[in-house]
Image (cartoon, rainbow over all chains, first blue to last red; front, top):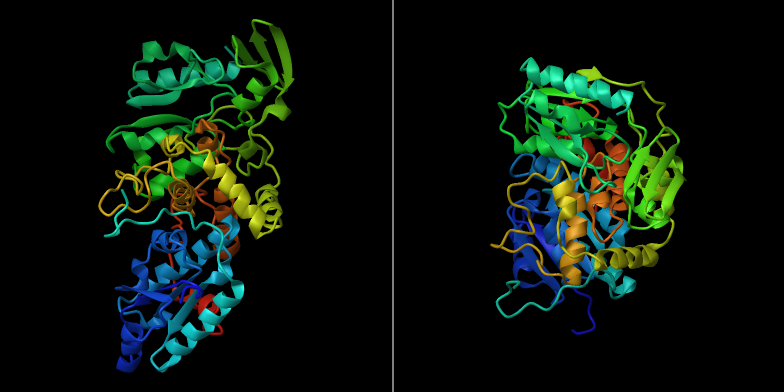
Length: 146
Length: 322
């Protein structure tokens, strides 16, 4: 799996309505996809994305609920504006915005997350390894920065 | 003393003696002739050393958040500073009724670095006149063209005349073409992604993490900055590539919809790092996407604070759209 491109998936814990989908994300993700669950996409801070990118992520994927279906009413609305702008901004700085992908899942989108992850993996694979912003020094065991 | 300085001084003395303000924030001459320093006058008798010229490079709105809300603050503001004040009032940093703004239409700030480049570091005194700057050094007197010395942010300035002031001193000046900011961003975007990253890498590489940019910025008033936070530590705090790049990206991003492009960060930087190109991008984006310009008034919420369902079309089209 060394050659596979590293992808970080930020998943809103409410966006997968079907238990099978959630089970797939929890247990059967491809090995190169790292899962980070968040209580809502509104919890996402640009620093989370930046940390993933600096840690060497070749792609960042964010899955959340469609606008009207946010568990917290409007958490994802605030996230949308921020994340959209942040990916534009990273592109300006030098990290290809094609490497950042959003999927907004609705109630009837059963089985879509699998498709979207596969599609995005293919896209990142085609883009190749990312060479910008991946500057973070390797974390010591346990994870904390000095 | 120029006529303008005399009028500011008279106004400051009036405010203090009539008890209309507890403190007047303006500039006074410092030991460094290239950089007059911010001054806080509380006594009408002591206002005499007030100065105002193109070398006054700080954004005075920066000091607004350092006083309790009950304090009545009078402040000398130029175009960008008045916008910063508006943005701070919007964020409830000081009640507008406890502020008294002495507006001055701005002719642009003279970049002290450009003077140093032209005549060397040894400067005895500087005189800012209408079109020229006269610099006296041990080697003799130099007359420099003022337009060539202007700071980059002032060349792209869109708001030279102060907004929403209580009194305005001096004649209004003509505003510039508001597209100058966009032009800079477009030119940089046209460079290609590799060149852009290389430029950013080289700029951030010089950073010594002194946080002068943060201290100079009126909008950076958090009690605890994300870089100082230790549990969890959000970014590397040392002078490492990841730490320096992370600082510049997130510092700029935290200014989205709040930055007024005054350029105080760049003027404060001891390493001469170009960073306004980052906030310029965010400012143009905020205008393009949400028709928002920071600090035009103290009522309109910033795009990140005011979101609505109408946004959705830009995100859900095609599912995995970007």
